[in-house]
Image 1: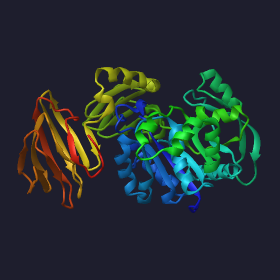
Image 2: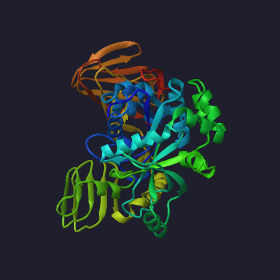
Image 3: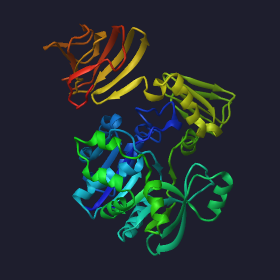
Length: 474
């Protein structure tokens, strides 16, 4: 399919992916991870969508904490889409996010046909997906809000369901039906009945015309409509914070059905998964002769039907069956495969005891590169810092710690209190606390340094920024 001028796509790149802990964490959630191939789930989604929309017509809504990582992942794939990355100052569920992106598109093209898709889903049959999207647009052109409904292959209890009714479109394209009812996640008995009665899984994918959506929003969610249509860069934080937290399903789609307004669904079988749990990751990956999915440096003896995933070091198992083991540098998960839906409960307890283990990894991505915490105690911290070619950290100062830098590889350009100089491999420098300083890499190869922080407090919030290339504040 060739991209069309008035076709647009919105990627929803929010959420924390709690059930995929310890790999997915608050500041690097599942959509930014490579869980289903070499590319991240976000990159796979963008590649899929750019087959049908022009690069400049692709919009992404994410959280401000993920803005630079999202832009970095899209930069090599779709540089034209970087200007369309919208960063929410706080998470307000899917309806405000969709409304914000839709209004931005509406200002450019009121008759735009917009598809809204999650960034963290896997779709193996892309041709079926694109065909369903096109069928949805045919009906959306007649002022319908259209969903893509997944044909169930099992009575799943983790999804909402859609009850289709009267046929709207039949012919060379896929059939499209009116929506009679939305049903929340059922128990197993109800799920079995729903599958038998022809209900569909709710994928959370929507297609609509920009002007129709804005009319629906004005009528049924006037508070959100008023804020979104008056929002500006200066008022973004205050206005967005005051928006209600409400989903697209509950806040608009279900309301429209209750009022007998135009809502439709396209049934599609496209080998879809929301990759919402470790068991769903296991299901989608290739198994060895013992039914195991192995990732990283692993050895399994008398181990079967298990997911064994190591991000660091050797992970060896003996005499296990139907388990999930996920090993990262600072945390390890071991659970029965049948309990992966309950990991949210486990993470809630971990958050009370060690909140940092649910929020950040030892390696933290930054717009200029990354840092890895190698060791940390009350009054010192050791990091490995990697600065990308042409990138620089902010001009900054610390009130409670001093820093020692040793160049491991590359060339460092260092500024301390307005004095600039360079350091080569095996050279070092010292930055006393309260001294303004900056680290930059003006070379064409990555810069790697070891940083040793010493002081009465070595928290990441001990930073005062004076200048920052990326527009960050303290």
